[in-house]
Image 1 (spheres, rainbow, N blue to C red):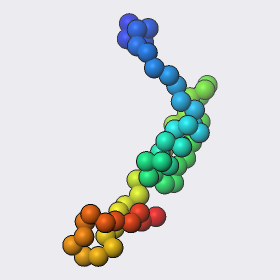
Image 2: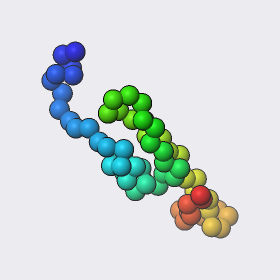
Image 3: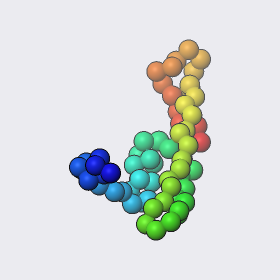
Image 4: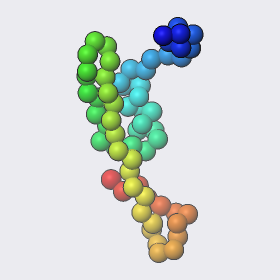
Length: 63
């Protein structure tokens, strides 16, 4: 309880977290309401695949 009263920070809405995840390359983002004003936000990281064999530096997001 001491930690809850002495830490700083802020809460983010589901839309804000969804935007952050989208910007970071996540797909399939879902907001699941739990109770009160809380929700769970889930998503999956897109896989990277190479354009050419042996070229790990260049990749394309695979949806």
